[in-house]
Image (cartoon, rainbow, N blue to C red; front, top):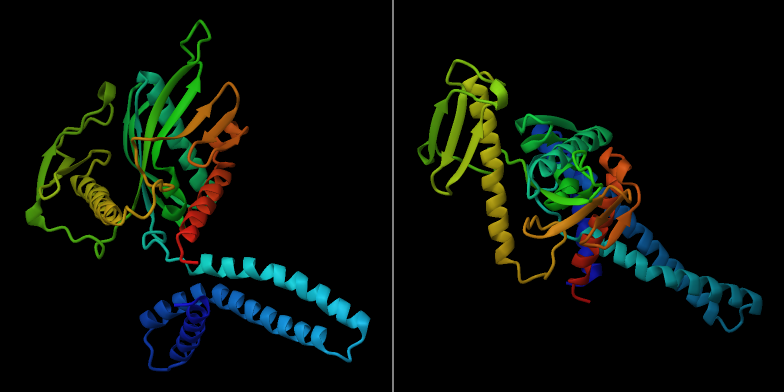
Length: 358
């Protein structure tokens, strides 16, 4: 199907939705669904109108330039204007192709963030805690709701594992590029000789699945309850409120003990489990299509190092796109993380555009 055919279908669908929304018989739920689709198509239709207007202008300028009796000065102006407009056309068409790219179905979802200490002992755990706080600050900058769901600390300020739910517009769409191994280079506070150490933490970002996305059968679950325990006696209680859920078909296990209520722990554990099952299925489908692209930006492959945080140089480098920013302090504060995310999203878009047939 040609680009023009695709654009015609978009315009026709937009008009069709507009007519459907005017129907007095439409219920509120259907109206909301159609309204969302209408709003999503609005900028695309605007860009199509702009492209068509440009093409009409080009045809008019061409006609003036070809007129035998036209004034020489007018012809020259028409030719210059035609050349300038024609040069813009490929960019306009490319932008429209980018807008037509299929969206990741999970992009509109909230996110489940999982940060774990990697190699490097206590220094890795301290770095994991800093990353967890970085995403908490970033969520605040973006106006998202950040809720810690599971915290396993070292008792020394470090984090063995931290899991959080992040809710807000575009949460998963932007955070999905953060999955992978994050490496830190710095002099630990305990290092007397000033030697730079390297350690790592892993980040996994999963789309939060709703019940309609993943149906979990009770018969597929083994639920164990036990008394909550924590480092140094923290979070310990005298009732069996902690919950361990094993999903028998996949072998996935989730433990939740942050809440004093067994019911709340079970609900949180199911939320995490649902997200992991949903992501596992997404990964299976992605691997079935994986012949598509050799290196996928934001694939979530934790075996590869995606970013290095060099504290002595105040530098953060994203190895997937070769981008370095000398504002590590601002990135860790959540303020400059958008610069990395924007560049990764642009690279992802460019890679997908390159796969489109010419």
